[in-house]
Amino acid sequence: MAIVDVRILVEGASDVEVVSKALQGLALGSEYNITISSIIPTTNVEIAKSAAAGADLLIIATDADRVGRDLAERLFSELGEMVGHVERMKLPLGHDLEHVDVELVRKELKNTLVRAGLKSLQILPEYMALRNQLLDLKGRYDGLGEEYRKLKEEYEAVAKAYAKLKEENEKLKEENEGLKALLESSKNIYRIDEAWKSLFPAEPVPDEAYIGKAVEKLGLAGRVIVGQGYIFAEDRALVDELLRTVYLSMTIKEEPPKPPRPPAEEPPKPPEPESRSGPEVVENAEVKPDDIEGLLKGL
Image 1 (cartoon, one colour):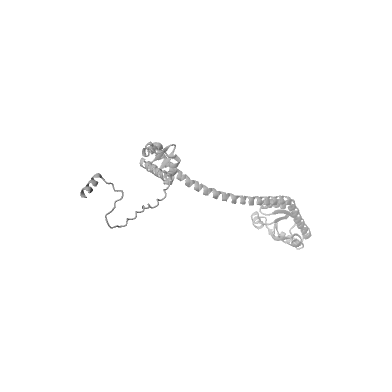
Image 2: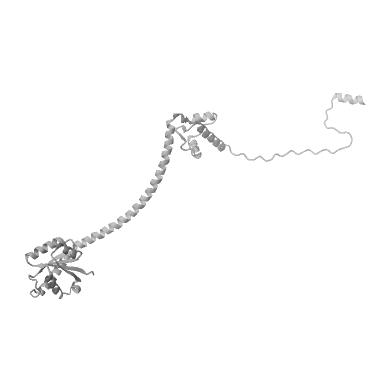
């Protein structure tokens, strides 16, 4: 248990002797857990403020007459907010230790301490209410701390998403600037069907989405825009190059690869006839009449 710091303010040095004598018969430390840290002999407010600041209990011990009461009231109003509690103690008239009833002073001091303790008990319910409020505020503070942590995490996530959206927005702005530049010049707008038929009259016009995909694959986004049956491009040469690439892609996609041809086999050669001695016999020879007549004359 903490020791209660009590300080006593008196009018002069003679009162210090009287109060000190009265304290000798009181076991304040063992009975009340109280220590009298100082006895302050002054009527100066500034000195009293300096000496009493921070005390748990300040006892203003003045004479019981009107002058003592006025002094006590003035010191009470000046020092009330600087200490935990202020209590007035009335001293018997007379400042001569030989003529003052020390036992009476001791009894008054004890009563003052008891009175201060009882008044402190009166504010105990208020103290408990404040304590409960403090605990409630602490719980709310802890809850707010957890909520702050979650909000901080959400903020960091939103900040990252914002940075990403900002980057995408910059890209869209660049594309938009390119689109605006294209739209400002109508000569850069070409109908898809007309441009295609001018290059490939006999071929059907491809789907607009197919051409748009080709723009993405070829890295022409921003320079070429396809939509609503039109092509927006920097110049006609770029449109022709795009459509030729689309045509080539469609041609390759439509013609499946042919299997490799097997090597051609040479027909077998007829066997050579065996050589025979004598005249050569010709099979199936056509004999003309003139040939027969020549042969007959020779005979």
